[in-house]
Image 1 (cartoon, helix red, strand yellow):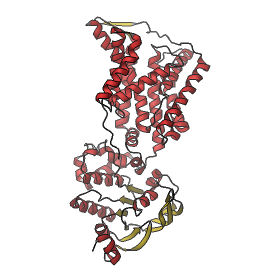
Image 2 (image 1 turned 90 degrees about the horizontal axis):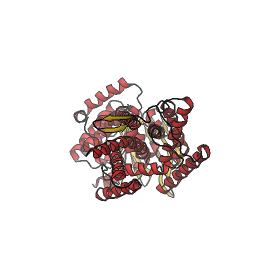
Image 3 (image 1 turned 135 degrees about the vertical axis):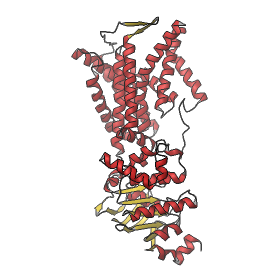
Length: 234
Length: 290
């Protein structure tokens, strides 16, 4: 589904991503772990069409997307939930969700999707006329995910959905992501919460200083000595 | 007391037209984040457009809107693609200098094309006055105010209850967030510029029914619109409307009780006082920088 072939990215002189290659299969849940400044967010932004590549290719469903503008990538079925959440805080929850369905052409479909998403996230249904900026951090994260689902993506990329949330809420968010994956959407997750993301991902990549240093099944990496020492502090 | 009521009425009538004028600026500034110092000159062009179309076709200036409004919508898209788009990520100084340049092009273009004479138009109701409850209100002001009010309502319905309107609000709040849900932001920016100039077209038409136009009238109108937008609070459309009424009220009051030449001085004075108390404008929210 997603095929990243040895991409390189520079911020002026700084080499941020070095020959990174990653594959995400149909319906797969793949996660990328790594510390601060490892290049995780840069990776997502480059796939989403926000950062130009120096070299390499990104293919989505066998089509090269590295030169395609961000909005067209969403139309192709690849959606993103960014780390800054980037919901529209001055607008109502309902308006946020309706905007999420921007790429849908059919209005009855948007209505159906809106109901489906509100069933999935009952709290958003309850607060549909509230201003999004007044929601709690966890609710805002749910809204960001729900908004992305309104586009009916084939694959969803998430940047640190656990950021700034209480442990109980983090568990809820991950449970939701898992459910989305089970419904048939491929997941590409970038996370600092290593334990959580490795225990639910099918496969994972370890990104260090802009390079993929390790790759394997989620559970396997969880038992890997290097991973345990560097990321779990065990 | 009776004169006072008369002045309040005049202030409100002027205020609605000012509001429409300033909303055009507010939308372009709020959505594109672009400082446009040629706004007044767009209004000047709309006034000429109104006068020439209605003289040429022998119709009422308001009828000319059938031609002028779509024309200005396209004008907005062309100006966006030709100039505004290149200025989006430019520093503010560049935006100011570039749009000042555009303003000069429009002014001197108008001087070449229409000469520096004052031009005005007379309508069937130009000299008509409504006498009601002891007050005298002239019809051109009544009509312009009604038309402006209708357009403001349409504008709000458009922004809050349509798909494109929602997208305009979304893009103005979060450019990246909008791109992430598949919105082509350049298309929305172009439409916003077009909508802004539709407001300009209608306010230019309304203004042309009671004011004469000359190539440099834009300098004054530009200043007026900026004062209104900043006073009301940047990014707040309601604020823009309130700001417009405050300024219009100041103008008529000072003009009557003191001296007409003092009006500009007066609204700048009020402008400074309000900004000292509320630095982000009457309806402005404190900007949070990430």
